[in-house]
Length: 413
Image 1 (cartoon, rainbow, N blue to C red):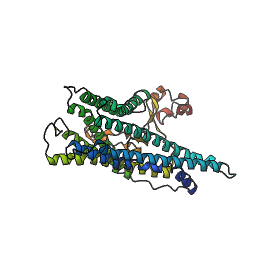
Image 2 (cartoon, rainbow, N blue to C red):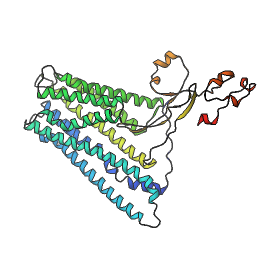
Image 3 (cartoon, rainbow, N blue to C red):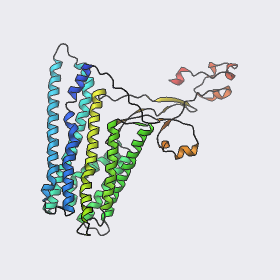
Image 4 (spheres, helix red, strand yellow):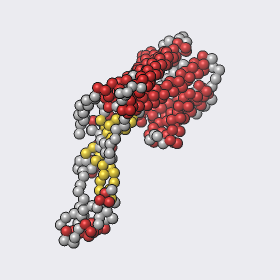
């Protein structure tokens, strides 16, 4: 066990590298998405917390939201640059097809998967940015004019959360853990709407924040599982992925600490809060956003380098076969999985170690899949004749007591 050694970089032919580099010009402007979001949203969070804690009580709401609006404008410029790079690449590819010595029929196997990944990432981030921008405009109208309900303000966020929930239930593209996280967000938004719009007497701020607290605790547990899985050798994280995992864990811990303080008595207009505590809360909110943003930017750069080095084709990892009493069965082997906020992560089952059952159950290594030691199964005597994959014609009576029965070819196929 221990941290796996990284494989040396493969030597990429110059022509393939050139094609990948040209295709990834579409994705390159989008790798700065997290940095732009981090700067704008951290500034808005700091200003908003300063106003809520009465450190800067007179600043207008438009000034608080201005940094986040500027970040959306920066994202829009990134999308424009990406679209321009896509247009130039398509024009160049069309020109190469007209040449007599064209290699486009070979190059397209490299650049098509990369373009698909770039467009998928751009569309996802663009849709989320658009809905969040609409939410911020509605929030400004709600805070400055008070002409609409808070349920109306949350309509863009409702669309994102309900869409993610339905995607997990109907399309079944998500596991139960991610679906449960969407449900926790939905519950918190529903309680928040009832608290603000209806001023429900039985709903406290602690009840509103409780689903978010549970969500953050689940995220911390998942991050510990991933990072520790890298230490024992199940997950093979890159240096950027490991660094991002540590930053995410710190951000979740600080967010839980922030929510613990932000309870029923957090508002200065309800209970007086000392100046040091207010400074701490104002500083902690942008720190959480900064840690998440820097981790996301590191993952974006790591994915860009991985696509440049290995291409965009999905790797094929054949599964192993094991002969059991019921016949041949496939067993879990090494492969690649996609983890949110981490990208593609390689994994490999741990080697089975014979030890005391109690010790194995208490060990944290038991939480990860392991690969049992392969054993050669031999059938002797009449016991081998009872299995449908074995044939009596492959061995004589004298051979049955001395050597295992051979497998017919059709049984393996």
